[in-house]
Image 1 (cartoon, rainbow, N blue to C red):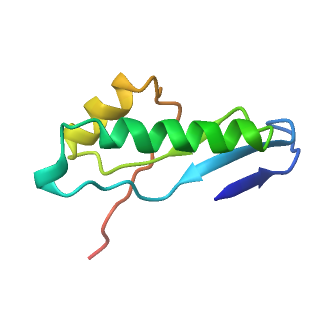
Image 2 (cartoon, helix red, strand yellow):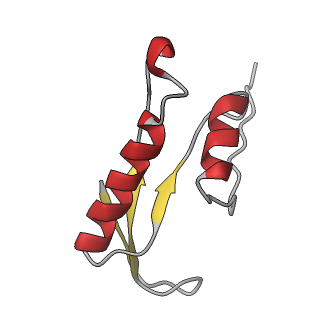
Length: 85
């Protein structure tokens, strides 16, 4: 998905490609398919003139965390929640 951020007091107007989900079935993991998919996302972004890719993953998904870190992604924001009873 291409996201358009409007200019505000906190940031300039910019665009990014946002990856909502990336999932490889267990039997096909660790065969380079995730890297291939991310390479295609990067290629798409550059074709659109967009130089930023964003995504999120569940904090307890350590496998995803390691994969994205290896792909060069950096954490820049954290989301928190609180259940009210």
